Length: 552
Image (cartoon, rainbow, N blue to C red; front, side, top):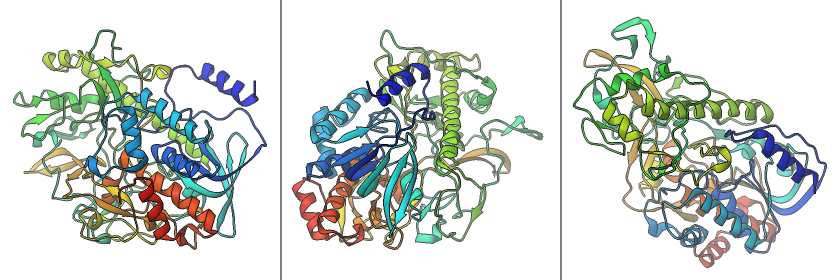
């Protein structure tokens, strides 16, 4: 038995069934691993990039941060955000055809299929390989070092993480947060945009006091309300849209009752309790709703359960430091320069993310336990919530709780071409399409703040939008490659160069599969022609993608 396999078994035993993001590696290896293409990130983008490159005859290694492949698709997001299904081609279409349906498949089923497809393609998978560092030589990534000690040497590298960790390690430009609306002339840009979500999940626009003692500012704010003042309409900031876990629920016999978290404080849900009891006219739908005087407050259904309410499973204001470890609660009207590099070591960042991960576990498990058990919840609503529990067939290694946090947005690369709202609306066209996106421009809330409305101090959510698109639009190849002066052998199909608004449409799992496949093909062409990724002949890439049934 190899040392690494023995470690995997021992580590699995010691870590128990608690869901976690990161545990430090306990062994060291000095193996040098050679391949043509190294894909870092076990997301759907990483899976399809690896498969496509391997099918084109290249030796490929897929490095997964944890013990899984498939990212959110195998981590709970199975009610697929399709957009227009006829825009999905290539390996994404193959995956959905083989899993048997476009939505509501099993998370474990999805991961099993991803592994099968990788094995069929001959891709070598290295699990539990957190990135440690890279070396840069002549404008290229020369070697990638992982925490277990192996050194990965490749001709091409692909960053397929949700956070953009590899691009940051390679000193490639990126942004975190929201650009001001003036940066790209975006109607949905910045804070307090006025064209969407004005009346959706806004506590039914009721004058709910944000203070512990209603109407008394000296009593302090209720939990889960930001103490930081928001900016002016259109201002940018460093906030990211809220994350959550996509629970898999069941109302069948044998369902797992919602667990009480290790650290539980019913008081942190005081704002929700006040909302639930504020006005008897509010109807609780336990699903998505946009009707007046209705709210979720959560989505209860068999299978994938998403956020669906003013105070719901999204941990608003809880993840701003996840992408790169930093956050300043400031607002700005002028777009600041892009960031480069690492503000802290990866080990420090992973430890921080583990704390944020556990805070999300605690928040969401506590929320569901509160709804199912607390006497402040109206009895009729509580009985409906208690009809459901966790699905005993999913996430068995982590007490039926998802192992993957829904990182809706991390770093976004800044390259020579930035996808913007104008692309999404088909007002700005590209000539180097690598695939189509078609989902609505969609952002979850970025902050929950105190406002004055109709002369009353109350609480509102800010940052959510959802704008449908008239038709699918093309994604530019230039948006997945860095500036040539920054790195010439790296492709970034997930944390691509896009504004916050455009990323809100692009950030869907089928589109990540599409972009990953196209990145894998481009990497192969760059190797064959011995050119930087920025100089890949687009006509060759297009022909390869068309042959692979990609829709452009």
